[in-house]
Structures are given as structure tokens and as C-alpha cells.
Image (cartoon, rainbow, N blue to C red):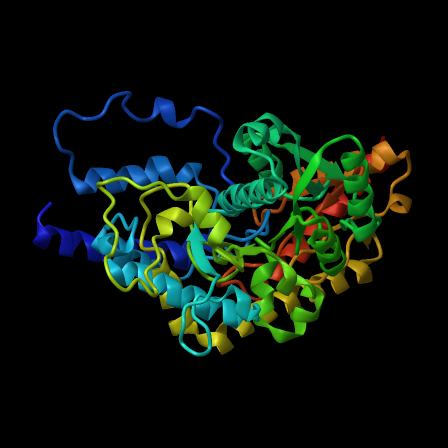
Length: 495
């Protein structure tokens, strides 16, 4: 493909993408293919000779499209959103144009410096404390700063490594040598609630420490008292607490942990406090949600995913640290083929030392496009629209009388189930009914949502978060829920 053909095919692909977005709401959001469907449709070896663009595009339409879950459909209400946008796509196109491997400043100064600036923009937009900014108000370089990770799971691993470095430094200050510390690394303990994302526990497996899972309270929150009790017990057993993750918007119910109380414990016990706000952190662009996050200014690190609820195509996970010292010390490895800037190094960040991979994409471009083309006011309006729709959905379900809300509706997530009194039978029968309701709604094909299990109770958890969705899509969701509920209850009543 030469430049002229690229121009032709590129325009065709833009048209194809635009037509997809114009029509995606008319497609069933959920794919109906069976496992292994694609293996029988495509060759089992790469082609020896070049194939035409027309053949490839035809295969996208006839073979790939049937196997896609349409996350960008306005009738997709599953999990948490993957909120892409046209400005973000354009930024990704420019990033692909440059196709850099930006492991340090020398590789492409603009890539490094734009990330530093854009992460400060975003940090200020969500109201983060100045400790997390790379550049101070007086224009000098700060101790903290932001970096774009691929996912919140990567962020968990990175900050846990930094936390281990901080713990090791503390042990050395007590007079322990490296050999002694190596012998007790396995006694390091990281703390999570039973509602924390699985990424936290996976991170402990990777770095080789222990994970302590603490039961959450009646509101699905990790509390100060429960954390302190777990730490006290572990210290009595000769273990070394070093890290705690608090969550702002859990996966199951969007619950908010006792951030301020957890920060008290982290301070007194010398733990690294990481706040995982992968989904709900985007809401902090709206000042009215910031009182819910009281305590984040006391954290060592904070992370949320613009690719979930801030109009930025995957992947883009924003991580800030209040002090990058432990992070850089833990992840910095020098080689002769990785040249460093000589002379003044203010504002020169080697982001390879802030993450696991060496190479990195120019991801800040798409975030830059989004913040400039939507503006702060447009982003706030986008978040508030979804919260308003979620509140309306909650009201419709309560008005119906057959449903109960199982967790406070604070953001775009609505957790509910058919009431036990509506269905004759045991708790097991009620759970089966709600599980069947999820299956029936998705098989209907007009909308998609997921269910989950919270303490033995099966619930439905639609999330409002589509980039281009409207109130009509939420109304359709309500219509489908009510219709399918009527059918399921009628069938169970006959049994």
C-alpha cells in the first residue's frame, strides 16, 4: 500500500467507522456466536501472497462483526463503559501516524512533555491535591506527577512495587541489611476488601507478597476499624503490613470505601495508600462529587481510567503519585542503549521508569484531543447526563413496585433485583428468577446488561455510560426489563 492508496482506503475506513456508529444501535449488542466459530471461517495459516483491501474489509463485515460485543452501542449497559469518542479516535490516528516507541524523553520530547502537561491538566480537572502535580504553581518541578498506564491492573502492580520499595527502605532504617530483608519479603502483607477489584490480589501474586482480604461492611465498604483490626492481628503473627488499596466506586456496587479513615490507619501504620477509582474517578470532574472522595489528598497514589467514563478510547489509565522517588527507584534500570539527557534535566521524565514496559505509545494525544474538543464544561455535562439517567432508571424501577434497589445510586450504576415478595418460594428461587431475568433480557437482543452476586444475592447491574446514548435508550432498557420481568414471573408462577 502506497501513500495514494492509503489516502483512498483511509477515507473509506473513516466512512466505514462512521456508518458503524450510525447503525450500531440497530444491532443486537451481544454477539450470539458459539466458541470456536472463527476458527472454521478463516485459514489456519497466514497468506503467502498479499490480499486485497476489499477482501479484508469483507471479512471484517462477514466474519469479525458477528463475533463482536458492541460496547459502543447506546443499548449496551454491561459492566462499566468503554467510552470512546470521535476526538479520541482522531488522537489515536495521529499517534499511529508517529508510531513512536517513547521509552524516554530523547525518543520524542513532545510525547514525554505532553504527557506531563496533560496529566497535570487532568489532575486539576478532577480536583487532585497539588502534591500529585508534576509542575508546581511557581513553575518548578514537583515531587509527584502523573503517568498513563495501560490499565488499572498495571497501575496496581506498579504502585505495589513502589510500596514494597518504601517498606524496604523503612526496614533498612531499622538496621536490617539486604540479606535479612530478602528472607522476610514473603511476610509483607497488602490489604483489600472483599469488594476490591481482582487486580489487587493478582498484583500480590506477581510481586510475591501476601494478600489480606477484609470483609466489607453492610454498605460494601472497607472501614477504618476493620482494616486496623486486620493489621493488628497480622503484626501479632509476625507479618509486615505495607500496602492498602481503598476503592472509590467498587466494581460490584460502586461503593466508596472509608477513604479518610483508611488514610488515618495508613498514616499511623506506615502503609502505602493507593486509591483505585478506575470507574468513578471520572465523576470528580464535577465538584459536587468531590466531598465523597474526602481523604484522597492523603493517598500515596491515585488511579482512574479515562477509557471507562471519560470519552477516551482504550487504553488510557491515569495514575498519579504524590512522590515518584520510590516508584522510580524500584523500576529504574540503566543500560548503555538507553541514553540519558545531559545537563539540565528539569521536566525530563523517563516514563519507562514509571511503568512495567519499556516501550510506550503516544497515548496522551487522545486525552489531549478529548479535553480540548469537549472542554471541561462538556465533560462535566457528559458525566451529569449519565448520573441523571441513572437516577431516572432508579425511579422507574421503584415506581413499578416489583423491584428493589440493592445499593445506593450515586454514579451511573443501578443495582437492583426482583423483590422476594413478588416471587413465591425460597431465597434460592428468587436468585434463580433474577438470574433467568438477566438471561432473558440479553437473549431478547434489544439491550445488554450483566448480573452479579453480592453476598449470595443475585442482582442485575445495568450501567448508564454510553458516549452517544440518549434518554430514549434508557427508556428502552426500562421497557425491556419490565416486559421480560412479566414473562419470567408468569412462568415461575406456573411451576
